Each structure stands twice: as structure tokens, then as C-alpha cells.
Amino acid sequence: MTQLERLRSEIPRPDLTALQAQEDRLLAAIADPAPARLERAGARPRTVRRLRLGFAAGLAAAAVAAGVMVAAVDSEPGAPPVLHTMPVKVETVLNRAAENVNMFPELYPEPGQFLVFESQTMDTVESNTAGVHSRFLARSKRKVWLPVEGDSTGGFFEGEGLAPSAYPGWPIPPEAQENRGRSGPEKLADFDGRAEYLRTDYAYLSRLPTEPAKMYQHLYTGLTHGAQADADAWQRVGGMLSEAYMPAAQRAALFRAAAAIPGVTTAGKAIDAAGRTGVAAARVAPLLGIREEYIFDRETYRYLGVRRVVTDADRAKAPVGSVLTSSALLKVSVADQAPATNGN
Image (cartoon, rainbow, N blue to C red; front, side):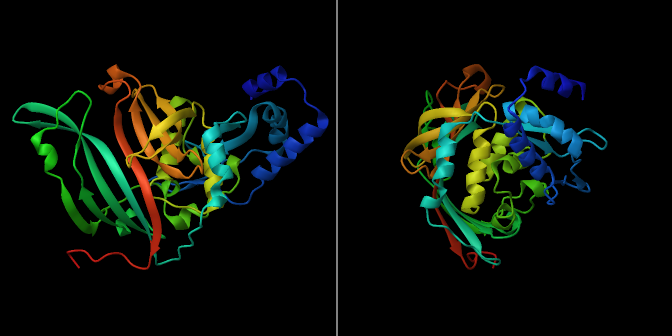
């Protein structure tokens, strides 16, 4: 409370009309009856510790200067609420993507159906055969069926190994050819231990907020403050874009919320795993020495894919500019049923 009072004293008193408008917005968000829940694996859900209205009114002045204040769930029983401010200054690519979500045909999957994701991937593979260390880029095509409602244990997978590519400075080893050819269809996963708030099935994502500030709060569910929390929130954005689909309203809110995560910038030109050139919104993970980029078409701002690029050679153990992993989302469709597997 002392820190908040100091913050208030350092901020110039705003115009009363603007202050009242900000206060009304903040109080309306806090009064929202839909509770945010934290569900840890094996733990009972705890509801959000809500701000008292009088306390919220005192925060309105800070909200005018810094953005929209939202509260995340308690990290420990009895702990004060963790506050996250959605900054006003945001990244451009993601906001343009938000503006363009209604340009594309909308899918309307129903319970019992499957969303089908077709993609192309590239990953760094390291091997040690007969004492010889090698590194190469494994390439593949991937088709995944995920139930409209439910976790990945209800999904199915089919793949095709493509010709590998050379990693910068390394020759392609003979074992790189072993994974070529088709595999599946087969069950995607035997277990899925993600917490409730990390679900990415359509039924769950379609119930998420359509307001950017509330989506920003969702991205930080269970997180505290600092660079690691921001990195985790950025990773969660990728989980809601790759092999996941949500209605346009939630998609727009996600893009605007992601654009406000601290450290997010425009990376400019980026090429996905299918060779398509686009523009990217990116965030550097300094401790890992990599930059994670979400790539969009440079004209329509449709989401294309994700890639991870080395920014620190010492930390990443690879040359600066090397692409460690990359994926390209090629197609999303709806199917009435999953494919037959060898075990069926």
C-alpha cells in the first residue's frame, strides 16, 4: 500500500473527466462476475482475491498514466494480489493482425468434431553416433486432429519426414536420413498434465475474454512479476496460436494483449518453415540467447508460424542468426471424425 501511495504522489493529477472515465472502466472490469481461477495439477482451484472498490478508485490515477491495471490470481494462500499493468505502448504487427481478424473465413466447429492442423516443421537435432557428435536440421510435415473439446489425449497425429537440411557449419550426418517417410496415424499423447488455464482446445478458448485487458490478465494467470513472467506469458501466446484455433473476437484480444507484453518488438523480415516470407513480432529470452518470433503475412497479417533465432552465441551454443526451430501453419479445417489408426 505504501508503494502505491508513493506511485500516486508521483503522477500528475489528471483531468477529472478523464479520471472518471478511467475509474468507471476499472470498476466495471473488477465487478465482472466471471471468476478467474488458478487450477494447478493436483491442487484445488483458488479464486482471485478481488480488489475492494475503494482501493480500486485510488488506483484510477495510476491507470490513466500507465494503462489498464489487472489483477492476477494469488500465487500462495493469503498472499496479496499480483497486479499487472497492460501498457499503452504496444507492438505494431500484432495490432495490425488484430485489426484484420475478420478478413478471413471463420470456422465453427461443433462438439464431437475435430480441428485438423496441417503444418511443416524444422528442428535442430543433435546426435552422437560412435562417439561422433553431429548436428542437423530435421524437417517434416505434420497433420494433427484435436477434439473440439478435450485435451491432447483425444488427438491423433500423422507425419512425413522430409529431407534434412544442414545446420550452419555442420555437414549432414548419415543418421539424418533415418526419419524420412510417413508415420501414423497414431494417438497423439498418452497424458496431458496442463493446468486448466493452459487449455488450448476450441471449447475453452472460445470462452476466453474478448477484451484485451482481460486477455492480458489470462496470459499472466498464476505468474508473478519480472522477466520470467513476461517470457512465460509470451510462450503461452504461442501455445494459443500453434495447433490451436479460437473465434475471431478472442483472436483479436489475444493479439492486442500479446502486443503489450514487455519486451515485445517488431523483428521485421522472417521466413517460416515452409519458406514463406512475412513480418514478425518477437521477444528475446536473454538467459537462453534466443529470439522467439511469431510470423505474419506482410499484407494480410494472417498468422503463418513461429521460429526461434539465436541472438547470443555463447548462451545458445550456436552462431548468431541460426534458426533453431521453425514451424509453418499451412491449413486449419474441421473434420467429423479422427482417422483410423493401426490399433483400431
